[in-house]
Length: 236
Image (cartoon, rainbow, N blue to C red; front, side):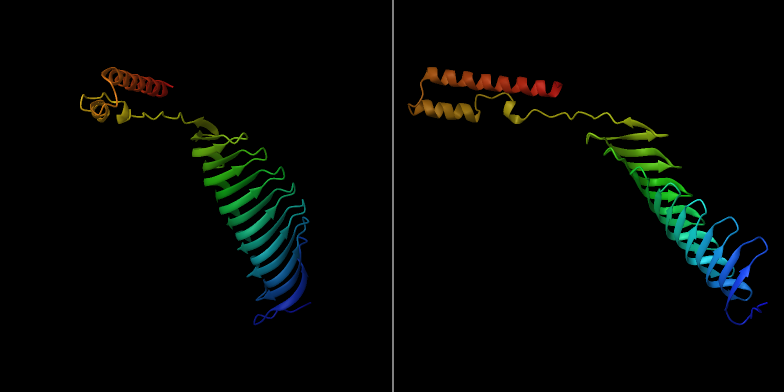
């Protein structure tokens, strides 16, 4: 029998009544310091202890194949860590009291990826979801589902903005802008710059009365065509 001293740590190998086995440091009759524990259900923990519980950096191996490497507090995953489940899905990020909480990145074995915020083990707040077909969603999440404003990038690279309600996306209808007619197409007055230049040209002998009339007719026709095209553009 090994006597555990209360005033310093000792290294022991001990088997508990339920079948768990521990090898590591003890202090004041409690697991404290570095140690390794083999649980009766097949799980294993390697890491730091504080007052009988995993606390600090550690690695936990489940009998079913899942692995966690990261920080613990009071026996629970707490702080930054990496968790890989038995299927191969991987999470890297923050934990709080054993649950995903804060920023994290989850990569499914399929290749789909989520990057964003978690709360109480669920996607919550802003997050980005990327699918293997090239599409993605950037926006709000509530209790693990897309809910709120967001932007979708479809697999054909088309971007659409809208609102999600319980994972159902409603695309926003784009509003057509009303383009005002430019001053160029406003009606000309007898004293417009075009008429003044034409009269000066006629006075200098460079254009006849008939030529002036033809010039004015051409300008009026051009303005009429511009007006028509602008109206068509507004309608379409």
